[in-house]
Image (cartoon, rainbow, N blue to C red; front, side):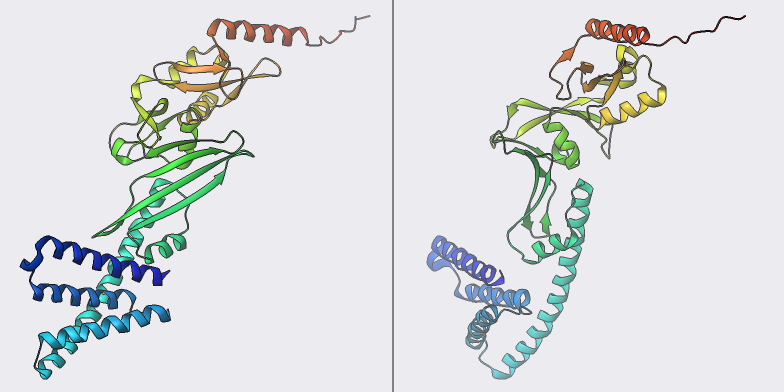
Length: 337
């Protein structure tokens, strides 16, 4: 891997130098060219000097030979050349230590950022990817939802002068049986950065409560009819007061017999984007789903496709209660003698 990286670094520098020389032509200062090339060779030494790869060390020996030739042409006095070499070696040693500390800080910051996203990626994997020092870094995580579906999480980090930065991630539900993919891009820029489990529920059509670090919480839901240029489903946000779950459950006919503790549990599940079920009658269950501006909707199936209106729900609920009461066995009372 390091062999490929050092070749890419050299090729990138050569192409950049050709472009600059092509733009300025004879106006380009030769001395400035030589200084840039020497700085590049010094950077290669700091970056790959401790590499165990023989191919990398061979490339470094060639680079050091070119570097010595450039210094010899620029500094004619051998004593000054020796002094410069000793000074440069000490400077490189200090820069290597500084680069190592800077890289370690960047690795720790990346681990913290990914942990705050709620993504389960091992520290060892993050460290190994960042040490490769490529221009772009990709981290992936896959979790099986059921037999036919899986949740793919992908983080693309771009390298900058301050190291790698990753503030967003892409979550996708891949259905191998039907052969389709639903994806969403979650980012703090549009206040949609939620953990992958909530991202899965968003892609399944649920509504989640995003408790932001700053400001009031907001409701998030996917608009499957609106996508960006890359095919990612857009996430819509709604104010927290657009839906009061406590009032909605108090109005729901299926929740009339629930205790306050049971309602609190339902609210927690609805805020996480789940579709909790509650019993209706003896052996019937209905499923709840929160919808901004529409309140809590009641469905007959877990996929939340067969909606029940309040009147139908009330009739079914009363019918189930009537059946349950009629099935009770009244114990016979022995007559007194």
